[in-house]
Amino acid sequence: MELILVAILAILSGLAAGYVVGIKKGHVEKEEIERKVKEEAKLEAEKIIERAKEEASELKRKAEELLKEAREKFEEMKKQAFLQAKEEVLKEKERLEEELREKRRELSELERRLLRREEFLDKRESSLDKREENLDKRAEFLEKLEAELEEKKAEVERLEAELLEKDMKVTQLLEEELKKLEEIAGMTKEEAREELMKRMEEEIKRDLAVRYKKMEEEFEQNLERKAKKILATTIQRLATDVVAETTVAVVDLPNNEMKGRIIGREGRNIRAFELATGVDLIIDDTPEAVTISSFDPVRREVARIALERLVADGRIHPARIEEVVEKVKQEIEQEIIAAAEEVLFELGIDNVHPELKKLLGKLKFRTSYGQNVLQHVREVAYLAGMIAAEIGADVQLAKRAGLFHDIGKAVTHEVEGSHSLIGADILKKYGEPEAVVNAAAAHHGEAEFTTIESVCAATADALSAARPGARRESLEAYIKRIEKLESIAESFPGVMKAFAIQAGREVRIMVEPDRITDEEAAFLAHQISRKIEEEVQYPGQIKITVIRETRAVDYAK
Image (tube, rainbow, N blue to C red; front, side, top):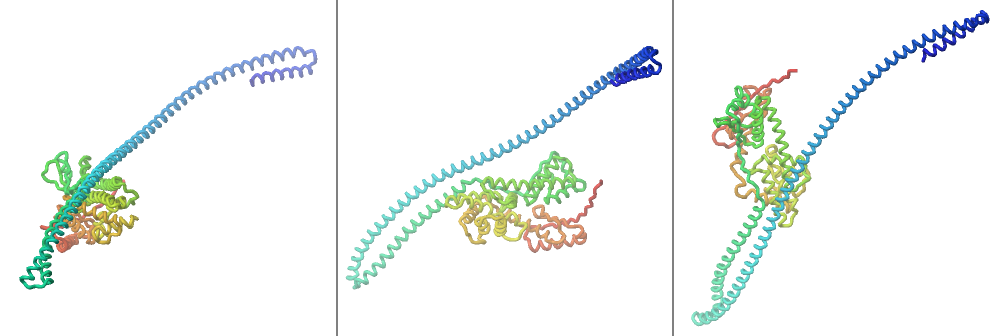
């Protein structure tokens, strides 16, 4: 377009130039000049137009190339955008699938909880059916007892009639004896009457005493039978497993070669394991098995799980042992909370302080005279609720008092004093009702009962502990002796940890190396042995082992 304009301007310039030349040379040459100018202008214009066409053709070719290149780039960008969109769709699909899996897991967990709730409701329904059956039996028993009382009443009326008849006979005898006495003894009537009355009174007293004794025995037998039936009915309504505690656990091994790996070079693995867990690991000739011994069930359970994981993993060395043991300890803490929540759910008790839940869960790993304390308090809660229902007291409050009455046993190894008073202080601290606090303080007679619910809890505690097979005195005494050994060792300055092992025949003591020297370690062992001799009664002898270990740790970065 620009070339065309240039050409037109050139033509106009030529015309103007011709016009000027014509003016100067006159009109004679005007036509000639115009002709030449037009020819030159025409030639020049044709040349310019030709160049313009060539340049336009070149521009068109370049424009086609640019358009082709633009189309190729557009197709490439379109392809990349499609791939990117496809990748985003795949990512969104994976995210949605993960959310779907999570929802399915939540649904599965919800179904599991619903099943547990359904089982619990089935148990409650079965319990209610049994209770209704027991109530029917009790009503039948009361009717029978009422009939027996009617029979006894008739017996008493019969006895009264006999006594009346005997009284009449006594009167006749008195008159006869009076006459005889007056005739034979020359006694006055008043004297004779007094003598006869005395003799007859003695006879009647003997007869009444014999009959009273017989009736009293019959009533006592009936009352004892009735009391036994009530207690048997109450206990039958609660079927609870009796937990038989042991002090050893056996871990199966894939082969006997694993025992050597557990021991480690120069025994370093087994020493690290016993130090981290506080148990005694016994490796004997038993094929493909090792034994874990400890009086503390928490330590024993931690050691058992940790050893099973180490054996399954195959990597057994001191650092790995400490890592696995620490992880298992955290899992056991979670298990403690889960155990408490399960018991609270079964009993229908809520609004419990989180710290109180932890203490309740710890009772799963505590025993009292061989009886698992968590099972014991759950049984006491059920019994207390049943007793409260029978006498018209607050059932939920009685259950709560029964559940928490032994909470002090969760910390008796940490706090000095009676578990009853310790438990009462804990319950008061976490805002439990007065009846619950009083049940903990008074169930062993260390305080006065102030509510009927606390009396129900104490009665249920006595029932749970007194039934056959519930407790074993020897195991409780043994555990107390083991705890005493550890507490004596830990009372000395510089002692870091103390573990009683081999059924209390050895005490291993870890000391702080920067506070206790090698010479002081030997003297410390002697001091601990003397104090144990003074304060603990035990069969045989106890080995005192003081371990002083120095570790140097660094990291390569």
